[in-house]
Structure formats: C-alpha cells, structure tokens
Length: 156
Image (cartoon, rainbow, N blue to C red; front, side):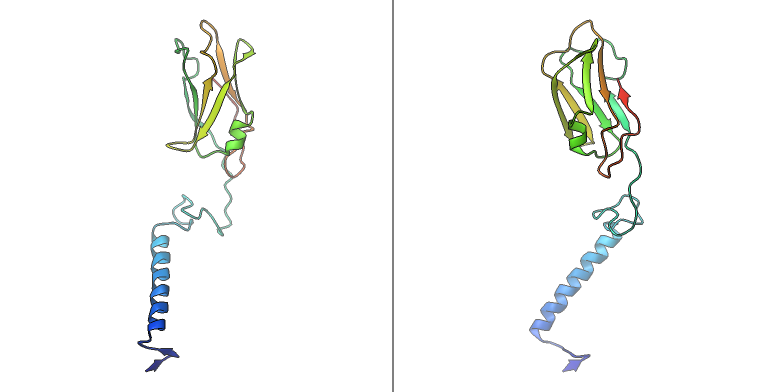
C-alpha cells in the first residue's frame, strides 16, 4: 500500500521513521529543557548559539579567602578567589595574580577550577611570613570565557 509516496509497512521505512521520530523527540525534549538557549536566560547546552546574543557582562569577584584585612591568618593558608562566572584559565594563570609581603614577591602555584564554583587558588611555596602584611592582587587582565575583563582590579 502506498501513502504519499511512502510504502507503509516496509522495514526500511519503519526504521527510518523511528529514527526521525527519535530525533524529533530529542529536539522536543531539549527545547522544553532550555538546552538551545534563548528563553531560559542561562544559555543552555548550546549557549546562545545562533541567537545573536553576546555576553557583555564583566565578571566579578564574589569572595576571597582569607577575607580582606584578615588578621591571625595561619601561615600555611592558601589564598582563594571565587568568581561570578567561569574564567579563561590562561588569563587567570598567566600573570594576572600576584602575592607579596611588604613589597617582596611570594612565590607559589596558582590553580583554577570551575568545580564546584569558578575559583582560583594560590598555594605558596613556603609558609606565609609571620608578623607581616601579605597582599594579593588580581588585575583586570583576567577575563571570562567571552573575553570580558574582570570588572575591577582586586587587592586583599
């Protein structure tokens, strides 16, 4: 039996029909879940692909540890900076961050992760100097994934 040029009951047609039905179902579910960006505001799985929108929001620092002006900080402390959104790793690790004590640089390792939140961690090579002021600085050279520079430099 022919219907609109498609043989009903043919195995190859049924396989093809199931494939298209599966694709249609996946697209419908992805659209409902907001995976194609647009309506939900979060960008979804495919970001703002094809929507014409570009992220123009500068990232900000939402937290530091230890807090600015903290006293009695353990000498073995790591310094952390938490960002408002994921950052470009190369810009965070590439010299935008420095630590010093009374003007002398403190060496250490800087690491960046997006999990569980976008965060940079500085681990000093040696314990922090006691009875000294330690200053951490982050410049606006640090950028988010869209290339937006940090909203303002940070010193804590």
